[in-house]
Image (cartoon, rainbow, N blue to C red; front, side, top):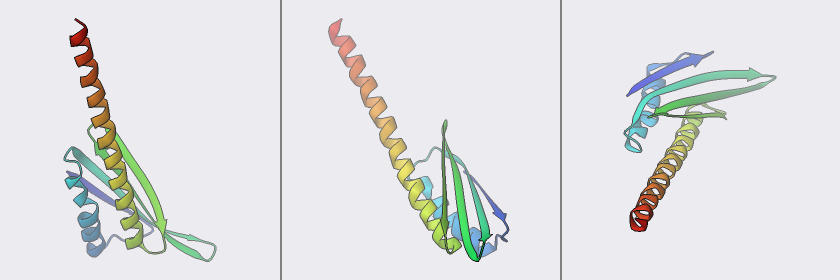
Length: 114
């Protein structure tokens, strides 16, 4: 699994990189088919408001999962992204299991009809 971390208007410190590796890299336990993770960390300043944006793109088999979140601190944004990616990985797993179950049921119905 390859993790790429990119910073826009922010320096990716070793502490921040370790935090991303720990939080986002831990997603491998939810799906072992993850091949690549791209994380973009950004510091945004808009009219007296400072925000931190974290975005992540996961490549799982032939699927690509993406999420982007904004928070008042970078660590909070990373945590929210991690939680959203966990939800998306669970949804993907349920989708694939349902598809597999329907295919098995259809083949059983076909065999019983013959």
